[in-house]
Length: 139
Image 1: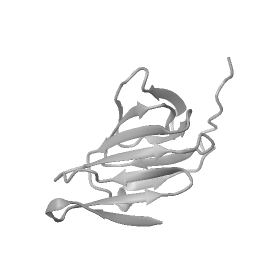
Image 2: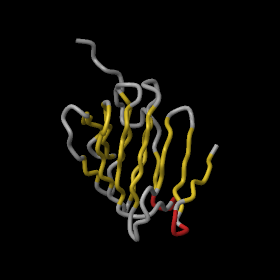
Image 3: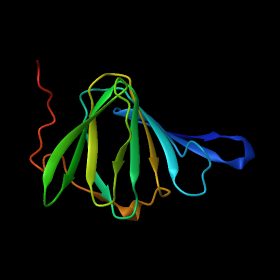
């Protein structure tokens, strides 16, 4: 279920919630690009795969931690980790399939995308298409 949150100056921010996360989309009224925030409730869901042909994503984990999948048809999948304990920005260029799994409940992901949402620029693949392993190793 989606609702619309009104802001001053007739700008809008979209709110979307499902069993995976709560999302604030287009948080600030930027001319180009968007800033979005996801509050991820579950560590059970894998949110993957999609890529863009034109858009670049910049991700930072503000709270908790994420296992981030990064894949291409030619090179397969590798994983990167984002955490509030080692803050860093991950740049995801066009042509890279990406997705994530939260490793802690209540993880918060903030991300800037260089273009406004355009469904024609989003290409999807299924979990498992890159023979990836989303589980985490117990140590």
